[in-house]
Length: 445
Image (cartoon, rainbow, N blue to C red):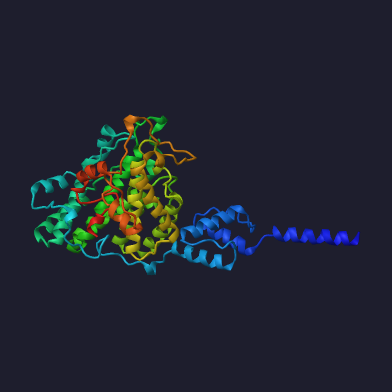
């Protein structure tokens, strides 16, 4: 009887140790969860959920998990976590946002302020009534934004060409236009972030014809972001008085449209200017605020890592019904643009995020070569802006993503598959010289 008791006690001890909480495993779980791998409850118990998270983590590093959750795994995870937390001492702003020097670029096109038409086009933006335009002409599905997006692209394109050619007269015209846009408080009367959160959401009652207040806000923010890029390019040309006017306008606009979004999680999707992340970086550059830039990149790396799934599909974008391909490529172009700028400014891209971007590029290609297989990926959760019906269908890469092919090669090494409809339609936007989803043309890198 005594022997039986001893045997039972030994069995109990062995079983207890097998299920005992381990501080090493608990640390591993915490670190995995911090970078978006679902390790489950941080209880120190090494189960299938934690093991799968480790397998996925090492796959993203191009490695094979050895089966143990010990100090080696902790060290690897600490290193990867550190890449999600760039510090201000790593940040070095590029002089002209996307480059250290503006040079002549064929992809920028030939638009110039030597042509009075281009001047008049930009002047059309000064004090423009965007709220009324949007109210009368746009809905949740279709945003008619050319009256504000075309002029800002004209400004950027002609300014870029003037600087690259050292055309003093055209640079002077660009500077005066920049100041006039600021003096008129252009787009400030558009709905701001705080107010838009009080309005009904887009696709109200499932109706694509319903008004989308967020689009009014989003496109005003996007145009303003591109304005800040022009200001950075022309900063050295501004007189003290002109600088004061432009700086006051930038801070006023930033306070209304962007500051309330700083480090604020967007539930789903990846849209214009990386949901405002690039806008924050552009402002940080204007203000020479490396603390803000580092904090924004730290936040956005984690956001991108949350929004982009391990297989490369993008939460919301890739699941918008018959326009899923269109919006997937739209989001991918923006993600790649953000990563390019962050890397250029000194922030190292986490391997986990890079792995997802590579897969996302492959998914963009899958949508081109096998649309049905691309669409077969199931999605669980709310997706209120998914569109159904042939009348809404768009089955090609987004034509406004004019940088996607170059950025895919630079950032991921994946070549975009031939997409004839995209190539034909993008020509309309390519002639404007600027990918205003990200504020630069990657074909000029």
